[in-house]
Length: 360
Image (cartoon, one colour):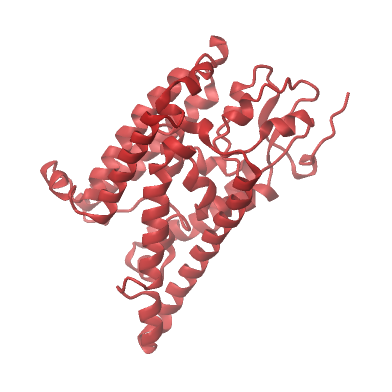
């Protein structure tokens, strides 16, 4: 078992902080309280200034990076015997530290504005707002446009959404590392899957509509005061403020991280992230799949238990059925914990991406 990195599986439900025990609820309460304080008060501003950081958000970036490093150490101690996991987590942590913390921190020192290269539209939904694009240097505006609208979906078509959700994204990075102890708590029920499909695509549509309305306001808003008030004003009920509050603060922060110890680390990614929804559609049309070797599954259930996206992988393996799911973030854990090597992540040509009967 040690050779396969599975020695920690047997203790999963025995540790209260990992099994919705009292300790787990306490951890969830602490995380939720932290995010409520972060988003709705300025208590962290003095601490940020004392450390020489420009704002509480930069302090949060530092805390976030430390949490990812600590989580990566925890993760690699259990699963670091797999090369895929070492490289994937290493890249994810490096991207967070370099592109989502250090680079935005130092850019103002050289006369630039903070810019977060690792976040693209629609996750960073304001990035394609015309006013935002107009305020950026040409190369950064082109990066935002081409990265969001062309590069991201094309890479998802070719490699699956894992290139972003498990290798680049900071939200996924925190789930990969700090959130790994709770991955088995993700619901595998059909009701959870039905909720996921409705919720994640609803937020995706809202992100697209909100961006379009902001663009419309930028073009004609000065001549239509009602449009300006409804879409882009500072009023609490404007579309801009409501989307930022509900999706950006509550769903991505307070709920998305606060409930790790209760519902698993991918609540945001699975149910509400508009970027995950867009890339998932590209993945369904693309080359990524999980291949199932025929007649080898022993129905141990490790793959389904440790799927952080709530996919019942065992059901596919039992049917000898290779598959592509829009939700899959390509973390590779299902293949890693399989004691018989039944599963394999691969990029197959489109004509081979069929559900194979694979009988004897």
